[in-house]
Amino acid sequence: MPARRVRADARRNVEKLLDAADAAFRELGTGAPLEPVARRAGVAIGTLYGHFPNRRALARALLRDRHDALFARGDRLAEEPPGPALAAWIRAMAEHAALYGGLAEMLAAGLDNEASELHDDCARMTALTERLLAHARAARAVRPDVTPADVLALTTAAAWTRAQSAEQADRLLDHALRGMLTP
Image 1 (tube, rainbow, N blue to C red):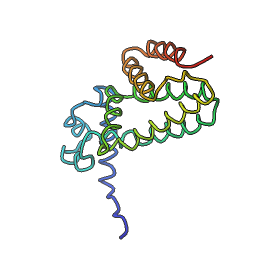
Image 2 (spheres, rainbow, N blue to C red):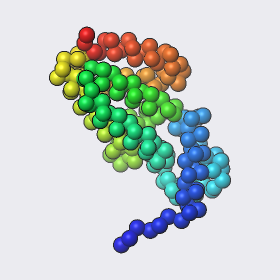
Image 3 (cartoon, one colour):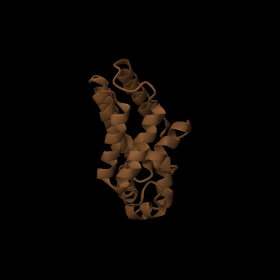
Image 4 (tube, one colour):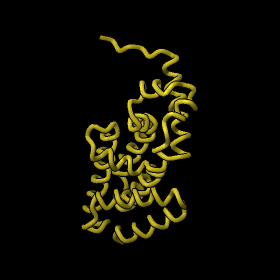
């Protein structure tokens, strides 16, 4: 059976909802109320929920292109020298997770919830982290006791800190990476 074509007005509504959600999430974080998002987009709340049954589905749609770019970067980094590649990946994940307040926590929760619309993307981020960490371990470019959970905790802390001060977040990452990576 061929896929149904999406009506032009429905596509426009989705675009308006994504623009409104992006603005609200940037301003108020991922916990922003969704009623004002629908109003800002010029649609009823039922239209929002018709396209995005929950907040995670809305976030997934907002992040789709950004996640694809992040994954492509991770794949490219896997071909680079392991220590600098791991550091670059950690910085990229922290910067990504700082896009919206609360995003780091939403992503971490998505990894633990297989029913979450964010689960597959979170699992892919974790797999890339494990791959880059394994390469760094094999090259003895990172301390052997550094775990993927350590990297996640660091990126979450740096993302939260970035909301307060990008300079402080960069300093935090610099200090942590000096402790994690071997000379």
